Length: 140
Image 1: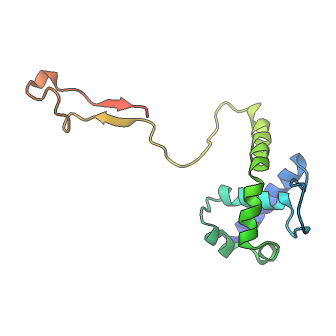
Image 2 (image 1 turned 60 degrees about the horizontal axis):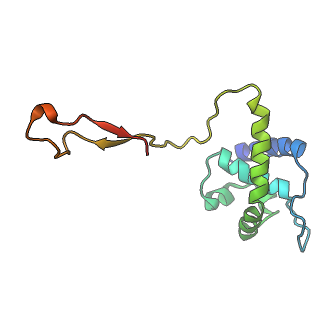
Image 3 (image 1 turned 120 degrees about the vertical axis):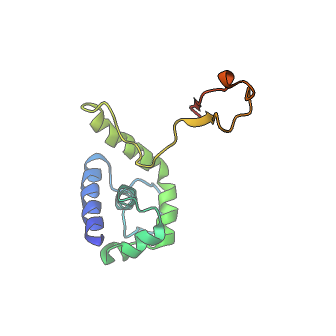
């Protein structure tokens, strides 16, 4: 997993360097060891690899990356870079718009239609079998 994380990080960073500048935040007290673009690359790599837990991310980080940033600094800077990350996402998606009609935004299953009326559970018109409601779906 660590090799995949490092390879994915390097590839994402390579693409980001083509579309954005290295330093995005205007004011920083000290020059950080990890640039803004490297931090965004790490964040996008974690998302890409479905690493939801920061604890898991920092447990699997290669030593080279782990020596560049601490966990609390990562959190703070990532929050500050949130708007820049969204702009980068839009720039990346604009490359794909020309030749794709459909996109998978998130791999998380989402219930689009809920079962709103269930004939077994419903008490409406139970006395007459011909009037029992069918199953209904509600897109909420």
